[in-house]
Length: 232
Image (cartoon, rainbow, N blue to C red):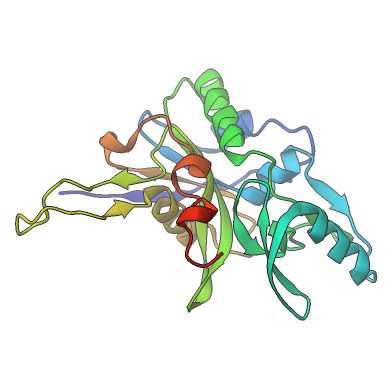
């Protein structure tokens, strides 16, 4: 029987610029080979010093920071900006976020979340002696659907997309277009035990399909190029 176990990683301290996440995760989590560790963007950005002081009473300063983090603005409505970041993500306010950070600060997305995931994975191998996949997750809205969900913005050692094209479905028909964004699915599953306001910033998934473990990249596998995107 297939089974997937998801466990919240509790006990992480408040993360500060320069902190090494891998030893902290290894100390708080019971890890084994074949696990997938999901870490929120917020703590990764804090550790990498991607925090900026912004006066809460100065909306122009926040707007200027969002513009700086954007390579292209797609839509505006009031204070909301939908823009494309340097990594190719299309998201609200270029990922600039005030939640779960001290008053007067915002976090920015990691410069290269795939690299961030690789760094954590290498650190877990060194500090805990385990071979795991790592996903850096963030909360995104979705066109045409209400509500937000967590997605992968970086990964290492675990597939971003599993390509099922050319395989057969349950009735023997050949699948022609099916590519499953498994890193997004794992990120969303992890969020179910982390929550948005609990202070839990990581989770471990055990029981992930072993065939999904490989070198991977969210930026290369999930992010559509403008030529493939019907909505940009």
